[in-house]
Length: 200
Image 1 (cartoon, rainbow, N blue to C red):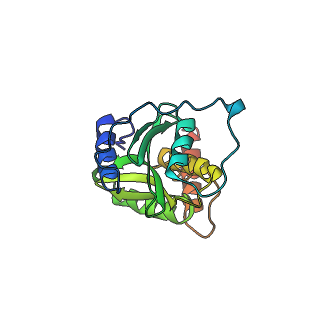
Image 2: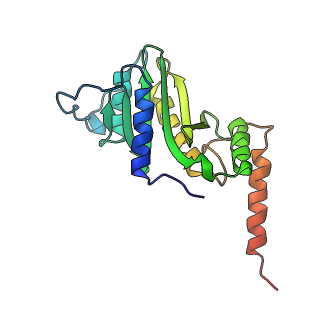
């Protein structure tokens, strides 16, 4: 399967498309100064209380990736070498974290169907989504009630949902019962066990 995790140019195009659709993010003014350095972990202040804000989200992103780049209400950053996008809209009280996975035109109907099955029971708070001809792993949430722990969980789930696309289709946490993913994963294990059997 042809993925786009290393396609920097496509990622930048997707970034520009996403940021342009969020109010207040198009054509942002250049920053007047570099963002302040994040204090070392041993001197970092305790987690902030109160509603999550775009500014606090930015602090969390910079802690996750000191090389993160801001553009308006959006951020580009990396986790485990996977490029990610975070956008927030304080006026609508929404935020999302996402990463591109693959072009839709290279995916079979069976793979797209399997992706929808996983949305029901395996990827949990993250979701597979399609926009602009790209399959994304995305976490979408109200902005103000989000806390630091949920942010960390969101990044990890988005990462794992993208990393396991085409194999186990999981966000790395437990699965919701009653769906098809347990059975699909069992089939994968059985197939591998057959391949491991000695040939006669």
